[in-house]
Length: 227
Image (cartoon, rainbow, N blue to C red):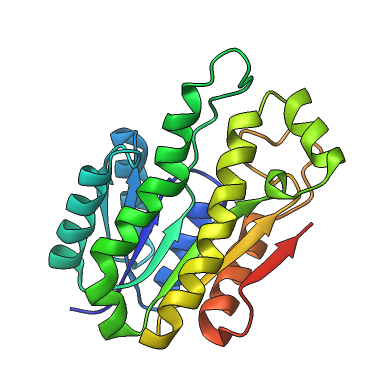
């Protein structure tokens, strides 16, 4: 068996483009998301394009489920050589009203990611693999960004992305001695073809996927931003 990329938080847009980009480079693809029907359709499409793929429906906010799917994907498709974390949960819009929702948002954005990395570590070490995270501009520390997060009802997502951003840096420092690369592409623009595209999107999903592939290959930067 060859090497595998786990794409967590699969949907149209960035994660689909990443699956196809890495698939063209010879990776088998494990697609992870909540909606089985969407995953099944994507597997069929990837297969028609000559890419080996399997669907793993799961709630990535549940660490045990994450660990299980990582094990299953490694056994079925081959060792995990890349982990792409694109998952997020759009809850916790107003933390002064429903602060408990923040726990669920962090479970998906931070705790699930960490569980996946922990479970995949033996494969990642063996493969000198990569952990590739989709970051968001709401993680930035400035008053304008904070005001925008409040206006958009995205306070929980902003907190999660900020915590995730720090986790990426910490994991990069911790795992580089093992030959594992950890990096993030921060997307600061609307991506065409996603549910956020209101007709004003400027960024192609394929451009983001290419940025992830370049990070995976060069491994010279921890963070890059796309606008």
